[in-house]
Image (tube, rainbow, N blue to C red):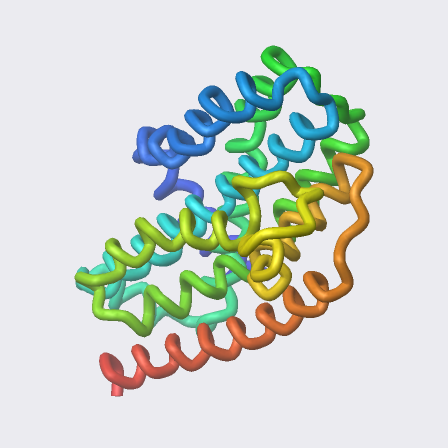
Length: 245
């Protein structure tokens, strides 16, 4: 536990030193709320509530892409990143600390979106619903952090920025975050249950509104989490073997 606490402190201090990075990460979700949710869905309480949850999940995707994909790729190219990898404790403390830091980012990043929904829309959600929704967002950090860990360690560092720039938008689109959650037709509705984004989104929607998660989406979310955990572990070990053996 002491090792995990030390790594978590390291992550928090690193984030505090560059606060503008956090502001930049929130730009796209905030613009999405102001340009699409508020004017188009603001008068519909159900749609406004669920769409706010979608934008908060989009924040999860962006934060995970930056912290894990870009952050790891940058560390792989610097001597300091290599030194940190040699410290005691193995990969577990580092991974746990990064997930903890992401969770803090996600909760803090969701607050402006919730305030926009409260002020500019008819969204309805109780304090308990919001707390449950934030808990669902924290759970959503896990599969997407594993995905970006795998990309960060397996892909050429110079290509990671390209992948992590487009991955959140593709995952959000295929997962149905930009469409009506209750839609039952069309390409996105047919594909989305097989995308991990959809399962995470349905957990958030169920927490903040009257929405029943699809069994297939939940099963696929579990499958994806296991697969991504394996891929992240293999990518980490492979990178470790290349540089330290």
